Amino acid sequence: AREPGVYLSVYDLYQPAAFFERDIHEMYGIHFEGSPNMEKFILTEWDGPPPMRKEFDSEAYINEHLNWQNYNPEWLQELVAEGGGVIIPPEEQRFSQKKK
Picture 1 (cartoon, helix red, strand yellow):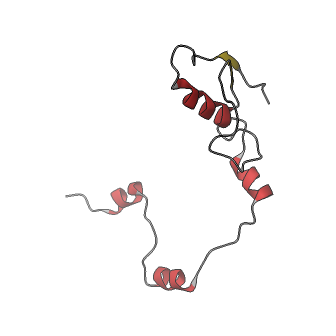
Picture 2 (tube, rainbow, N blue to C red):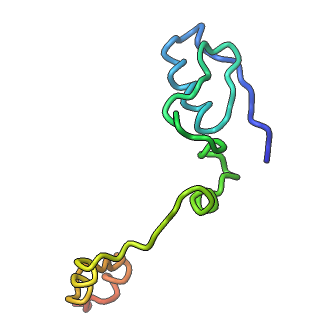
């Protein structure tokens, strides 16, 4: 993994930038030198790496940290059996229509 970048804060020139710098720090791991607050912001319970970085593997993180279970309730099974509940992608809809 690459080291996160370090940039100079523009807080002294534009104080509302602190909000954006803090968000960017949390999501991408970029540090803004001179920014007044680089503490956790939105992801207060997050203990993983910055989630918006290219090297972050969301599927692997979910499989390691969350207890996923298949969700197939009876009402959904009935709906699918009746022909509903299945989403047809637009490209399939386009090809299934007769040309006029």
